[in-house]
Length: 218
Image (cartoon, rainbow, N blue to C red):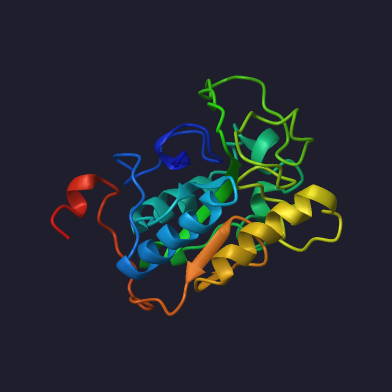
């Protein structure tokens, strides 16, 4: 299951991101094989994985950097970074000039309880709700409750933030536990962010577009 956010306007930039031509998840073969095995394990427990982002071309990262430097563009602030001044996004580590996603073995994802409900489309200009609001108030996502939405620039997104308890904490630990057994390492600051180790291309930042033809025949 996938909801490739950067091909849409429902992300912190508020527009489709450079380099995302089709909503496809591209990963290195070892990462893809491990993710497939994680999906098999979760399906037996009544869950599915849902990916938000996989390989990210360098041109997309460059788009993020340009956006972060434009302090007048705060169109999506109310949902994705309500408590963070845009001028702090670099210093606080939310935006950087390089991303592990560009090496091809990092994935952003969540859990969906089956049977899955449909997720409605985001309508540009609609009223935005903070990404840390209660789940029934946030933008509707068919995932389980992780305590925040995806790409929430807030310390509540830290995987083990002590304010996240109960079913929200259990859901985060289920995702982390299953993926961890298969070689994925979680980024502690983002409950949704996992990198397969060892990475096949630890020092290479790719820039081919996200499209089926980019990997056709491989």
